[in-house]
Image 1 (cartoon, rainbow, N blue to C red):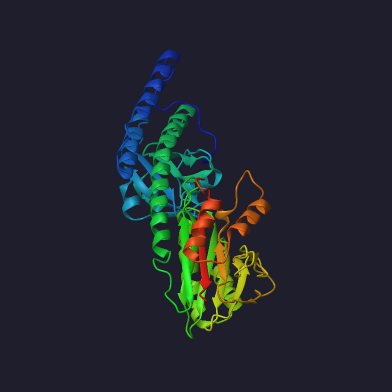
Image 2: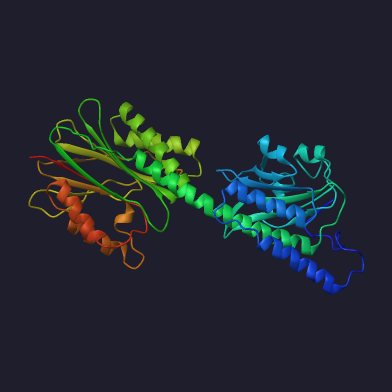
Length: 417
């Protein structure tokens, strides 16, 4: 039956073997695991190389690595020795179900002294004829990457030493996988994020635009984005958004929100109506996600700008000869948060020469400085002028030589005199 505690009778040493001989054997096994060269090897090949050594060192018939999918709710067979069909057939298992699923859910080692239908979900394990199994989670820090399990075609009791060696192997495998996933996810997220940012801002009558975007260098690529586009009837839509979180998942959610908002913007003139539908969309299809979004619509005659905010900081506006001020936008909670009321639309006059700046929090948030002080500093850096110069001066003042800790997006536009 399954148990969280390993049995204690050694399976690969003669009964009554001297303690020194057992210690030498254990050290030899540990050395075999520690000496496997995984540097510069493609991920799958590296994992298979380690699985082959595990199978030899622990005298087992199967060794399998399953990885969590993008949702974290399932395990997917990634590499195997002795049970290759599990990988070739794309086997998936819910976290919490079956032998491997329970290891993933508990994040602790487990032993199955007797493999039977009630203890495992994967029929391949029964068809293979496995009699005993043990497994450990693949974990780096707080991140669950998957599960490593081994199996024997003959009944055996896995010892504490067996699980210790398996744990050592799992740590090496987990770090190789984590390094590969981190690099791949960051590169993919960066590429996706760049591809979704507008390559060219709209060329529309009586308006000028400028933008800046700086991805985070230390915290990982996030879900910040900006957008600007012409609308039916001559209006212009301007968007600034920030998905909570970082990495590939945030970039993917950002892409979905950007596309959805563009679609709603073609159907509804009111920015609040657009954000209402965007919130409904994310609540239904992405219930665990959240983002702040600011959506502005410049009127076709350029005399006004109408805006609505879902938890996003207000834009700044500077009229010729006047200091910049934060525009009232009556912010509602971010999209993805349950709410009882609809978003609110606010309209402001847009005089000739007025310059407006929208931004994400990476522009002003610093761990060592108060937000209020930084926002005031930002306000003073905005003035009525050509957007390309205003954007340059804002970035010089707020960023300078500082390495940004979060994605930073800035979009400046002006109604031309």
